[in-house]
Image (cartoon, rainbow, N blue to C red; front, side, top):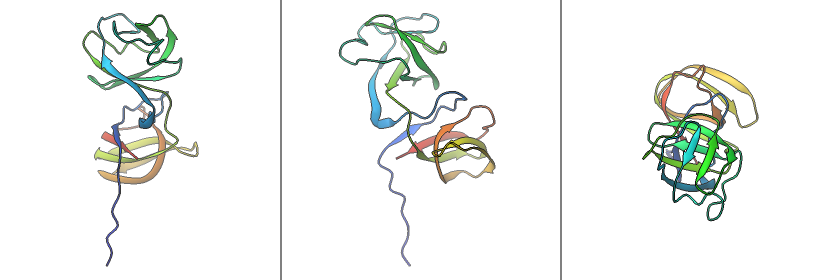
Length: 155
């Protein structure tokens, strides 16, 4: 009997959010460290946000240190971005992505309820999802209504 194998090429830790979808991992534009702490800002003295990396309003910022997420609301300068939430502090690692994914399969590390938006835009809560790979193609994992943890997006 043939055994089916899931082929995963790329993966990204999912940070559940009621307003921000899962980033498209192929659209990562920058990874670095914040160089100052300013409320609702990302400051990186070497960031070159307006030249080399050309960050745009609406881009997704992942705080890779404490697993929080926000979007860019304004480009203040080549070294400072305004964010939709206060997620960054000095020396914390971050990644910036251009857009959200159109859909991805999930791996659930710790079982629990899982509220998602499917790739077709349906919003549904799966009750008591088991740990492991899910056969659901999603573009957002909601923080409200999700008790499952250690969620990984897979492409």
